[in-house]
Amino acid sequence: MTIDTTTSKRPATWTFAQWSVLVISLVHVVWSIIGWIAEPSFATGPGAPTTPVLGMDYNGWHAVAGLALFLPGLVFATRRSWAVLYCFVAGVAGGLPGVWALFSNQVAYIFTFPNNELDAIEHFVTAAILIGIGLIQVRRDGGLKQALAGLGPRFPAR
Image 1 (cartoon, rainbow, N blue to C red):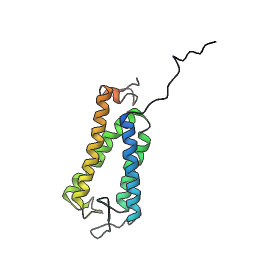
Image 2: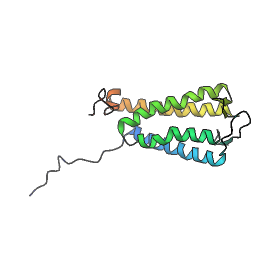
Image 3: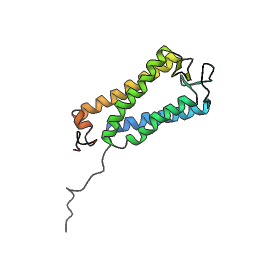
């Protein structure tokens, strides 16, 4: 008796985007937790305390914002199309506050960041890396439709 192994399913391998989103999300989640520990204050206004952690000014608000953006990345990394989508959405969502931080050290009227220029640069670099990863994966998959395959009727699964 022989066993037909040609139809057996191999475990799915993770894509470049999935691994990248997992690593970036883990790094930022840990960074946010360390920032929260370093300065747990949720004070607002011009005198709100902050503590720089690897160049980024942190307090409770900034830590929670980082967790809100990067904790979902740990889930989005589990599916091919979700990882690509996450790269674009998180890239834009993380880059936009950087624009505000570039011009003001009191972002959203509650976040006080004395090193706002460095914060802005770090937001821009993370955004560029995420969007770059998404574009690389789109290129590797042969187009946007293939990269987002499985997200819904406009992007059917392969």
